[in-house]
Image (tube, rainbow, N blue to C red; front, side, top):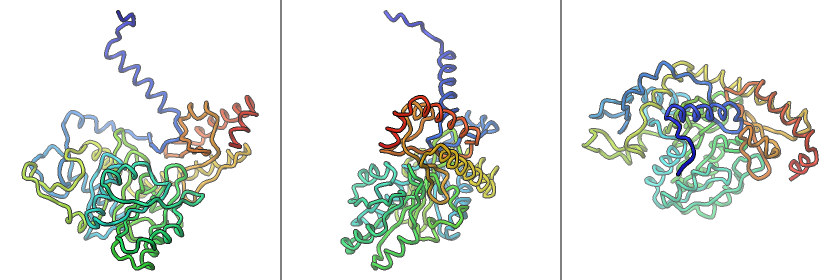
Length: 385
């Protein structure tokens, strides 16, 4: 017989809420914004909002937010300098689905192509390539996490007879490195590889990429054929979501009509979350492009402050140009667990999302000082690993 007391549903929910609140207060290692307030939208949770079908086509099902979804797509089409007469997109369940869609279009255009992606690419890419059954080659990364363009060029030369699908990253997972789409486009041009497709995974940095100075090359004018971003990262959403943008002319190559919903089947999933569209639309209407820029400048200032404070402790911290991610040698385990710091091999990072303040950084630094004083030998051993 179970001797544990049975707790009520409300008690269980309260315990869960408290656990999530505590975990949310401290994390610094993952790119998720939490400074949002969607209280005015709570009444919409009473309705089964389902954005099935193409947001740019009419649908029989009317409990949806397609009109708002189109506004979200138009906003990012302008930000990413898409051709105003040739763009399309939709709100996805997250960056992995967005990357899958970019690769899916590319495969349909060039079924005999080879995919090229760097070793710093997000883990979802390998899975997506496997799902789509496309041959692929991994390209080396530079020390800062950016794609090694010389290795890319050499590898492309060996496969010039095949169409090329290049998956670039604008803000790598650990170092927030940014692949130069314009430079990659130049390599393809130099090698006379006319059949090619470039998808840009801009999950984190795409939301503020237009505000980085000097401007980084990642968007449609730079040569991208599709771009993906995450909605719950820099913008912030209680539900994970993403945005996929591509050219309407490319989408038309794979569109199929579905009489059941009275719309075109152009998305990966059939039923799609209409509430996350509502959150994104509300946030973008409130912030606008200028608001996004201010968020970026705040995050950038906080990251610079974090970098300086780490260096004051003698820690060899660094950042990529325009980044809001601070990279440094891996931290001791208890700091990693307390602040939920992502660690890979010998490095750890702090991502200064818009909700992160100098006070958060100060609290982390105080804990770091205590750790250094408590076990200096262990600290030095881990730093030199």
